[in-house]
Length: 294
Ligand code: NAP
Image (tube, rainbow, N blue to C red; front, side, top):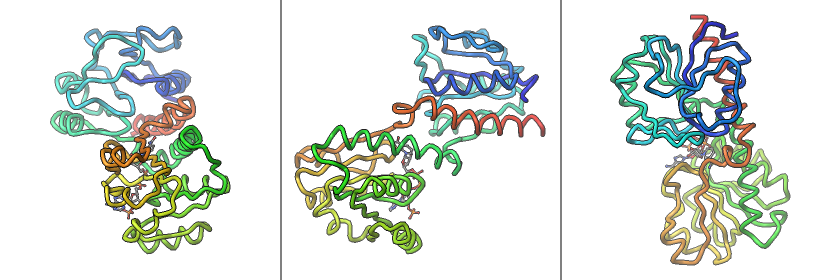
């Protein structure tokens, strides 16, 4: 239980509602900032304006998955007001106050470091990334179906990267009957790809491998689908880039060549916000309970 814990939830989308639901069930007291337009009321959660909140009593602050933008603004889907998360605000919190977000950026890392507050990036955790890969794959399947006129079954799909997302992508498209190959650079990854029953290739051979690819799915957050790679791909092929912005594809060249290339960020929040929220809510409630028992 989180009885007696005071938590500020600042901004966010539908995923945050699952978190609020879970934390109020666990008896935490919640200040909701950036939720004025939310019709639903949660018992134990109070909608407040950021300048009305008593941050000196906060045990934790929950930011949305992206954290803030580079100017400190927090995304607020349920409010028209601009909400900024600042160092001045952080300095009002007690020293033990922990800040949770999905990812960070130089602004957020900078203000938390300056204010000497702990920042937890949930998406750095393997468990969150692996659970989150499930809705990511479902979103990828949706995009692949929407943007092709052929079945996934029997099509040639190249996946780049065998990380937490790449492995789930490869496995699922293989199970759907696609002819999947996976590109990696580590020998242990090439061994695992073989064990999974799909075709391994070294990323050094990417240009040769993509010559007959119908769909290329990239998970490597680094420019890997270069103009040179794209120039070898069939004109009908589709690129779905899952890597975090700006992706790993030369989109300018893809457009010039007439290859459809799509950057597809934030799929879990789009295709399954409830599940994506529950994944975060489960981990967060565990972490908050651990903090409380310290
Ligand atoms: P991960 O577990 O760290 O996997 C990344 C993969 O990229 C690894 O196989 C890594 O191989 C490879 N890689 C990284 N840098 C490389 C380089 N310079 N050259 C060759 N290979 C390289 O990450 P993940 O959790 O799978 O996530 C992958 C990406 O998807 C991230 O950018 C993440 O933010 C994004 N993501 C997007 C969505 C969405 O909705 N679109 C959802 C979840 C995650 P090595 O081990 O050899 O380095």
